[in-house]
Length: 294
Image (cartoon, rainbow, N blue to C red; front, side, top):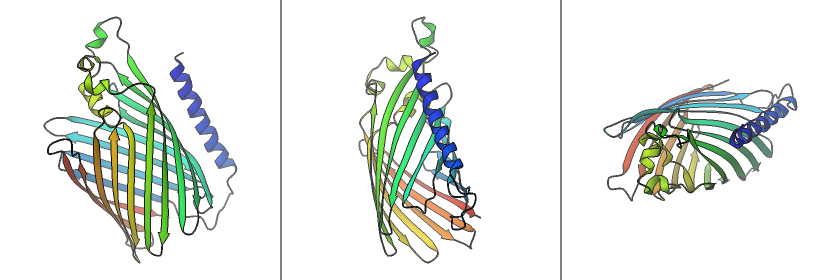
């Protein structure tokens, strides 16, 4: 049995055990817990990309069960494909000073590239500020191309193991909120040949190589929030550097969440993705969604 499979199975077992312990240790009833939330969003960009999101934050008597699903579709003159991602996790009561939890995420496109991520979460909250860290372990699988498999020495897949961490800090002052974030990732293989070695196109499909460009080396973010009486406005800037080609992209995003009544919430979002090293490399997008709480 491959050692990568054993490591993945062990990580998943640890995650499930942690989720079970959170459930068992939870009180049967928490009268002051936050309500459950179900949200749906759709966004589209001028590059032919569209995203459909579904997220669930379910109160189960103190801890929260988290679930999300995302479908991304690209349809333009250069690419035509769809990817899916699924996440399941659990955190303890967010109203507590110490907040902790774990997540399991699966992403990719079958027969091309997939990734499985196990992520932890630990945060300290006060009335004025919060600090959170998210360590993670990821297993990436690139399937080899049909051309490569014609040769008996070609493996069925190419596996990459990655470790990463993200740290976030937030400060609250009246109706204002300020956020800073840093993330870094380390890979057990050098990913640069995926962008520079001309023989790589014979080993993997063009789609697998295109999607691999999204694996991050490091990232930095800053955000500003303002809470109105019945709405929350967020503006964020994120810079991400690819672990494959070393190119950076900048994402400016704006989100507005409006309380329609005690249960329904309207979500609006938009932004601009910029790739300065690529001529004309910018994408404008916008989206709309709704959330229901109970």
